[in-house]
Image (cartoon, rainbow, N blue to C red; front, side, top):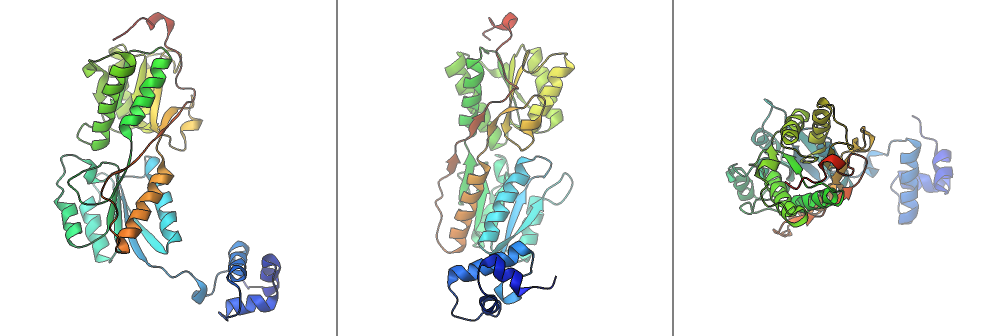
Length: 343
């Protein structure tokens, strides 16, 4: 597209001579005026001259488990946008079953000379995983930040959602609706987020529902639709009138499992998700869920990483962000015929 100085000048509210001075990098133009001209170029779809483009500070690796779960693209978008604002380019590495592993991606990123890496729900979140892979990166002096899955034996900044607080909110909400027989469909027990969700659920059930024995109310499964469906079937067999899920994806499966029994959500069984993925408000029924503060967490991760890159040691204490209960139509009062169940 051929640039018309008159169009840029009119949009920026300056003279054509001023536009010419900005485009040619000439002095004598106020910073605000220069920015107005550059903004006009962007808005009108003109490409900035090479010498006016933001210089890239380097590459940052961004490793996420998958993109099928909407929460991970949400994290990736926030982190990538924040990095671009600071002049960095994110190299997105997505894992798939049978594909490239986290360790392989890390080696590839090191070969590319990245300035740092952000790990989102990576192997660090597996309580059984070997921390040696992260010690190696620390030994190489590579800045990194890890999101969700806190491990005190890894010397790096951590940013996490408060999973235990989230389950407290979910259980308290369901108890306020009269539910006492509440189940938890959650991921595999070796993962730190699952460990924390289970612990928060047990404490909340004891405090809010007066139920101290919750062994038959917790069903570990996979963070998939099928995993949620299977867990829900087991919890329904155990008389649950409400189900908390470890992710929105699991909650979709749980709703499917409820309907396979010719039951309704929420008239017969209430379902609570986790994450507040973009599609949850448009489900049938719209899903009550726990909203991870993805934007705040992503921005904090980038801020910590940039501090590390700049030679400032970021705090090693875990930054724990409080979620928000978003009440929609997948939760309702306990059915009258089961209201006297107390577990």
